[in-house]
Image 1: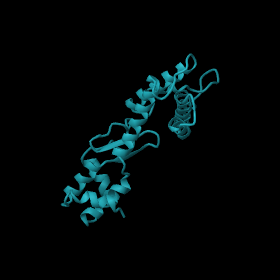
Image 2: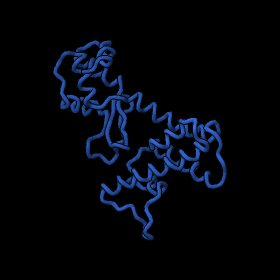
Image 3: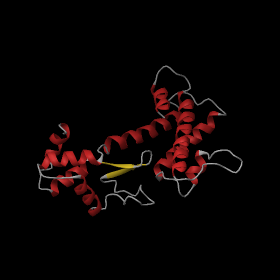
Image 4: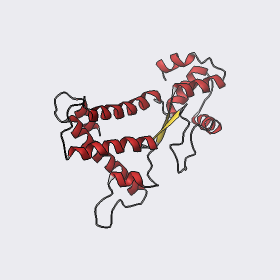
Length: 200
């Protein structure tokens, strides 16, 4: 996937949209194969071929959220078009679709940038009070911010505060969540800025 993004953002390649669509399709196919293999579900069809990405996206046990599935189906459409026509530059309709998809992933990473350990350190520093990982777990449980560990729907998080990442199967949190925790511990929410700028 990294190669696909690098090529798409580079000025040294032609057919960037086509290459991105093909490479990203391969990357997500391999990622989902890995998921099913770890779940002890061999990703093999009766004829010996492996599951296609479109088939895995249609399975009820696919771990990806609806939004990610929609993006990947858009990429599959572009990849299929590669076989029949030149798609042109990143300014083409297909190229803009790729840019929109990449922007969505980028926005998610920027808005929900804190792992649980980061949240704990920031809250502890901002409030000068004890705050451990167990306290953070109790907090997200009380506020129903994310589902429990063994849930079958891990993407059902409260996106006001938290988002699930299917690629590495974990959750990250945003500034609003940290501000809520700081406020509940009696700290001034304005201290969030200084705590984030100078983490432990």
